[in-house]
Image 1: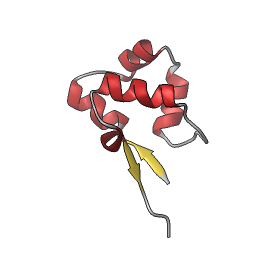
Image 2: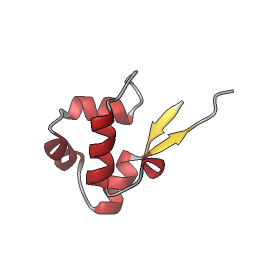
Image 3: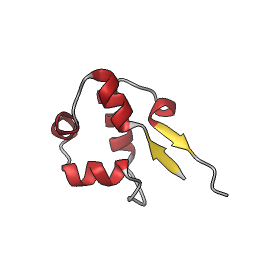
Image 4: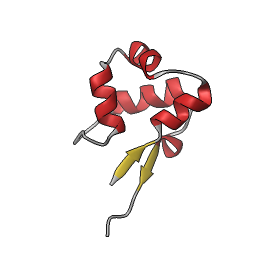
Length: 68
């Protein structure tokens, strides 16, 4: 299962979810769905934008958790 470190990275950079939504032109509902892992897919554009605005690499953005 994949999980995203979006909230941690926002805090590190002193930014809000509202700010990120404005930068990426997405709704807070969609951002929250990504954060909670309620999406089944995510576009490469969103991944690129998340890394760009959160000033991180893809490996800092995404965690892969083993399910047992």
